[in-house]
Image 1 (tube, rainbow, N blue to C red):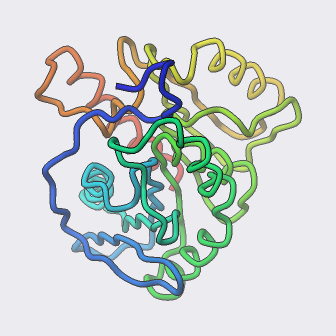
Image 2: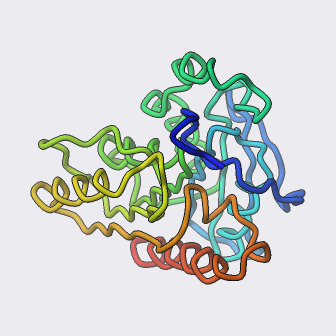
Amino acid sequence: MANELRPCPCDIGDKFDYGGRGQEVQIEHIRAYVSKPSASTDKAVIVIHDIFGWQLPNTRYMADMLTANGYIAICPDFFVGQEGWKPSNDWASFDDWLKTRQASKIDKEVDVVLKYLKEQCGVKDIGAIGFCWGGAAVQHLMLKNPHLKTGVSLYGVIRFFDERSTLLHPTFFIFAENDHIIPLEQVTELEQKLKQNCKVDYKVKIYPGQTHGFVHRKREDINPQDKPYIEEGRKDMINWLNKYM
């Protein structure tokens, strides 16, 4: 479990035993996991992984969940060949590790993915969701990238917002009440900034009793008291995407 003694911004949680229904593809210089529904669609969601990388079964499980709801889902390797974080790594090296994998430095890769989705998959509407590191990346994209329709940032460390920040797209922010990495006072401050500056729809929601990573890093059958919030978070994510895409 993540705590204040570790600089890790993602709960290690549970690693799902899940193989995935999609396939891995090469898109220019990026590897990606792509999952497509049986019926044709012109809507896609970019799934941005956490610090454990694009091959984590949990993230592919979430991508396939999107596909079950009618979306093409693509989870690119935004670390571009660099290894994801491993629980066995020395936490003292985490800050240096993170410097070479910045959530605000994914624009080149996002452009490649957008081109692929539009030219190879016939996609017109594209959204983005992200977990932890990926949640921060979604925040960056919602502030900077004009080509996306909407985004869902799940427990992304709040680092890109200031008094002048203006969202370009409707954005849903999911946070956990008991997240030691993202204190509730930071969430309150984010809400104040959004209220002052935001001209598009947004929502900030805090899920009671939950810890960082709960939507994709907790198994529903481990703690019965967590199950309703895990399911609620996933349903809320899907409903937001459906509303704006």
